[in-house]
Length: 165
Image (cartoon, rainbow, N blue to C red; front, side, top):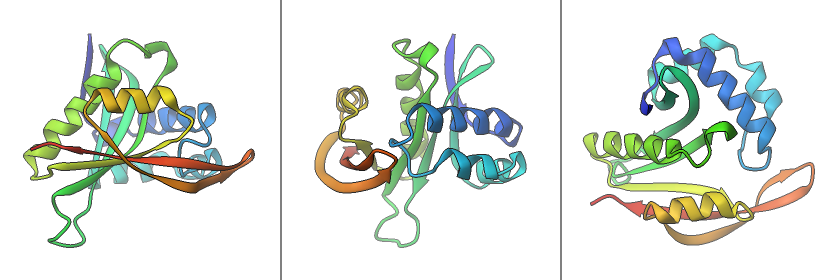
């Protein structure tokens, strides 16, 4: 049975391992490098989890995915918005509904804290992710050229939003 919930400090090692797996598998899909993620110890991940809105997907009790909800709270004028980042589901669980379960858990939490606009960036060539987000109701808003410059050169991102009202 696949479930998703807010992560806890006790999930830090699993969250870190999944993050590193994600960065290895999809190096241009994220703004962090494997080396940067590995440089952060488990305690740093535990602090991040305790301070924020990190989520974890589980197959029974086994961690299989992660995501982060990043509220834009620096101004009262942006408190209705949150960015979704670090979304990753282990390849063994692609097509199982795990990503949908994870996203729905974040949406429910976002609504509970007054957020009604979700925002995210997806690599322009990642048609699987773009199709998934669009099936969830996200709309393409624009393209960010040269969002990431990795080993293969620059890659563009697509900016998407979802209105939860």
